[in-house]
Amino acid sequence: MKLSLACLTERSRRASRQAYSFTCSFMIVTEEQKLEALAFYQEGILMLQESGADSLPGGGFATFNYTGMFRDTKDLDVFCRPGDFPKILKHFSQMGYEIQLTDVRWLAKIFKGEYFIDVIFNSVNNICTVDESWFDHATHGEFAGLPVKFLSAEDLIWCKSYVQNRERYVPPSRTVNPPQCGCRFSTVMPISVL
Image 1 (cartoon, rainbow, N blue to C red):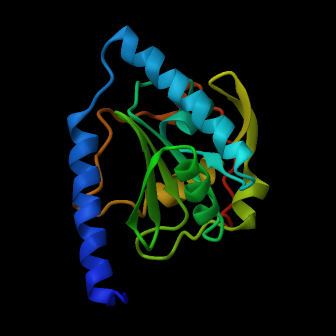
Image 2 (cartoon, rainbow, N blue to C red):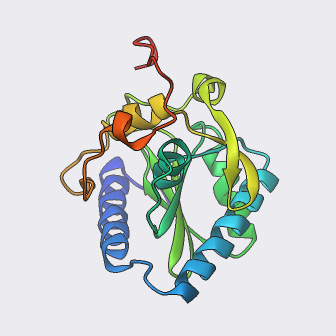
């Protein structure tokens, strides 16, 4: 059965709306949820490593790595090359996780109960395609007790600036002035990176 591009685009829009409403309806508030989330993140990182595809944690966890500011979050953002996301999805699917290609241009999701992983490989406007340079700029750190390479601060800022579609963007609850919060961003952000 062949699907038309219009059909795929409509499916993508429906999936995006479903994922957005799921995201908005779930917040971590209890200690039990925090422990469940930590176990999910640890399992997710281990399975990402087992998949054989390179990936970089980003989002709130990379921000914590650079700023030391933590907030409980419902998902784990990971970045991978466009050619690697099918391998990641296949691996998680084989392990019993629900997978979803939310937007064929840039985003897939992996669900386990209330928790999920955003697999990001591009931006909605095709400007921030994850490539080898993202892995070259990545920094070593620890996440959920496991060694990882985090998305660089520069790439985190760059890609976040392109995820501001009306239906997706959720502005931060507070603004932070990096010099005042002791951030560990590089002292000079090369213009060539941005």
